[in-house]
Length: 557
Image 1: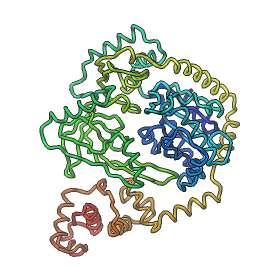
Image 2 (image 1 turned 180 degrees about the horizontal axis):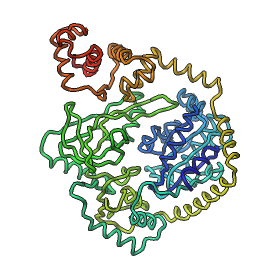
Image 3 (image 1 turned 120 degrees about the vertical axis):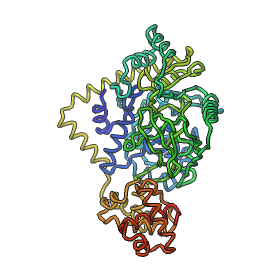
């Protein structure tokens, strides 16, 4: 099935299990459908089974979304308590669609529990209370992990609701990540349980792989102790001062804590010049993506790291935000430099990444799927050096193999059924479904009133939110239909009332800023005219006003 076919099926309103090999574009397609829903003002619950996966979608864990925590089951009284929580009650009142990513990591009994909560809160016996449910993942990835004392972990397709929700299977078969034929042969042979001499020879060749001199590959290990030891050991080898960056959080403490646990950026990042690092967030404007490797070559005037990537790009790594959003509002935010030490990481942590180069040790692999996950992280075979592997590394779950054949057949049936629809009929059905889930006029009014209530002093709050999205003042002014001077005035008001604003992304010549700062300090007043006169009109009033805001934002005047 292609991405466009899967998107058509999603738009028809079916409950869907979206799957496919690593690099088939599952997350890309999910984001596309989420944007389509948002464009039509349809509330969608964006969740994942793990925090790391949730951050890729700007969502939250399914456990937090439903209020189930780590519970295996809930009695009627506990369900009632969940329903009394205003935030959960409101999100279920609004939601029309529920997305759960990385479904392979969700226990079967927890999927049944999510269904139970949805039915209770939506007051409907329909599967998931009538929500359109989209499950996404790949059962060839690593399976659910059971804690001590928990029930036996089984894949989500063992749940009762899986068989009773009318799932359409969308099995994506195009490859958007690996462009390397040999790598595809290796991954497909492992995935299909057909590892042969050709596969093993390709892997042995990787053992002798010599990386380009300018590339320092990320080392993948199966155990945390190997990773921590290597990263600390390598950092300590480097002479020179250590720069420490501590993560900042804003919002509900438990939501911030959940974001911190799930974010690939560490709570405390220790760096030195020459440290090997990896970007852990996508920022296409700054020319890096999650998994881009590089080396710290220096630190800028603000003490932020300057990274040279393996492709030769020079990037100033400034703090980024990770948000947990719900119904268009940011519920919690963490801020950190989007880097982590990258001499080594665990195979589990590597899930969801694409790496330029990797040195992988699978000699201690301890569960089926570990080798597949690790090897599918690299983009090409030329970027892979394999230290070792055991028999387990080449294995996949036999049960999953059988299930995969069944899923592929069901996906092919879904394609045939889709192709039977005339284009006009398909579009009409999609529009009919859209109308059933679009908010009513009453709901739109309620949402608008909620926004207004939430944003007292709304004009300043809107400016603040746009600043948090790192939009420059000119863009904010254009978007809001006011002058840049008005926006600077808003920022001054926000700073005056004690709001903390990150203005480090605003571009302003460091030399000019230093000169203006000296003039403000010399004048001993912070009005513009004396400084304008002192600098003999070298800078315009708008420049002085902007500089004053930036300096005040940093606490320098």
